[in-house]
Image (tube, rainbow, N blue to C red; front, side):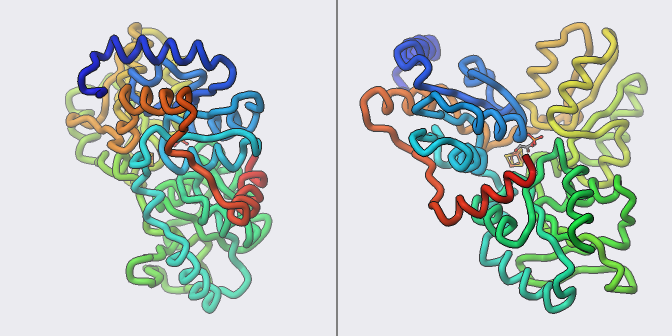
Amino acid sequence: HYSELTSAEMELRIKEIRKQLGNKLFLPAHHYQKDEVVQFADVTGDSLQLAKISAQNKEADFIVFCGVHFMAETADMLSSINQTVILPDLKAGCSMADMADIHQTERAWKELNKIFGDTMLPLTYVNSTADIKAFCGKNGGATVTSSNAKEMVRWAFEQKERLLFLPDQHLGRNTAYDLGISLEDMAIWDPIKDELVFDGSDIERIKVILWKGHCSVHEKFTVNQIEDFRQNHSDYKIIVHPECTHEVVRASDLNGSTHYIIETIKNAEPGTKWAVGTEMNLVNRLAQQFPDKKIVSLNPNLCPCLTMNRIDLPHLLWSLENIIEGNPENIISVDDETKRYAVMALNRMM
Ligand code: 13P
Ligand code: SF4
C-alpha cells in the first residue's frame, strides 16, 4: 500500500513509530544513503564509525541498519545477543563484497600456499561477507576500512612477509603504494580464472596479492574526467576515495576515506572549490551543507550506489511497521561459528 502514500505521509508515520519505539530503536545510516533516509538517522558515519557505534549501542532492541548487507552483518556480529539487526531491503547488497565468495577464497589460499608457504596474512576490507571476515579471523588476519587501511597494512607486515588483500584491488594497491611498495611487487589473484597474474620477473619479490574485485561506483571515475575537468576548472581541487583506480588517485590532488573527504571539505577555507570522486548522495549533501564552498561531482553523469539507494522511505516505513506489529522482517543474523571468527578479525582492527 506504500505506493498510495505520499512522502509526507510516510515521513509522518515514520516519526510516529520512532517516538513510540524510543530508545528501543537505533537507526544508523551510512553517508551514502539518500537524504530521505538520513533525515531519520540517529547517527551517520562511514564504515568504521558505524562498526564502532554498533558495538557501543547496548540499549536498543532493534537496530534498523540503513546501509548495505555487509554493514548490517557487521552490526549483528558486534551487537548484543538480545539485539535484532534489520536491513530494510535485503537486495541492498554490495557488488564489491559479492566479488569474493568463501569457496573462491579457500581455493585461492590453497593455491597461494603452494607458492608462498606460510608467509601470507589475509586482510579484508570490511566491504566483504561475514564468511570472508571469518576466513581472515581464522588465519590470523583482520579487517580494514578505508580510514585505517594504512595502519592495518603496516600491522600485517609486522606479522608476515606478504599479504592477501580482499576484495578491493584498488584500496589494496593504493594503500600499499602509499606505504612504499612498488607496483612491480604486487600481483593480482583472479578468482574467476583461479590464477595469479603477475608482471614482474621475480615471484619471490611479491609482497601484496590483490584480489581482483572493485567498487562499481568508484571505478567509474576516470583519468579522462580529471583531465577534462582540470582544463575548464583549474581553480578546483580534486579529492577522491581510494576505491578509485590507482591512476585516478595519482591524478587527483587528495585521496582518502569517506570520513577524510568530509573532514577535508568541512575544514577547507570558504570560497574553495572541490570536485569530488565518491558516491553522489554524499557529494550532493556536502554541497548543501557547505554553501560557502563550491562542491561538485567529478563524474558529469553522477555516480549513485544503486544498492545503497534501495533503502528508501517505503522500505524504512515497512521495516518499522513490522517491528511495532511484532513481526520484524529482514533480520540479519550471522551464525555463531562464522561470528566467532569474524569477530576476531574485526577486534584485531578495532
Ligand atoms: P567507507 O565508508 O569506509 O569510506 O567506505 C566507502 C564505501 O564504499 C562504503 O560501502
Ligand atoms: Fe559497495 Fe561501492 Fe556501493 Fe560501497 S559504494 S556499497 S563498495 S558498491
